[in-house]
Image (cartoon, rainbow, N blue to C red; front, top):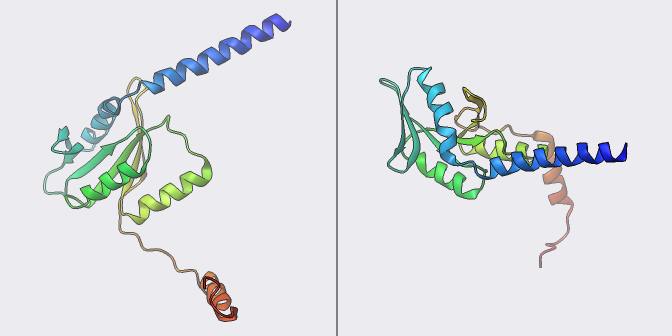
Length: 166
């Protein structure tokens, strides 16, 4: 019995390790074909590595769509995408589905992406045909004002005596 449990455990660990190794060797270019197929099905002409853009998609008489691939979301890809906004207002970050974030970080990252006017696409290159999920479309960010939070902030400001930083 114990021997059988050990075999199941080691095969599960081996499987998870194998998946991690496969993901470790994933390249940004692995995300290209599923995205290209997805965009072409919507009538775009798609080309990769145009100037400094990972993907450029053009449809007749429309603003071009720029997608920047990264295997993780980090400050460099955010800066890179913001830089692309000088070329087009339709800029997406493209990341693999295997990239995991906890719920709190995901919520904050999505908020930042929206605030910057960027979009987010999740790509699963593992499936035979690939899978593309547009999570956020780029658009102008208009934050909702919170009157209760503002009132609490101003109330605390008015109730403080002196300046605690001095």
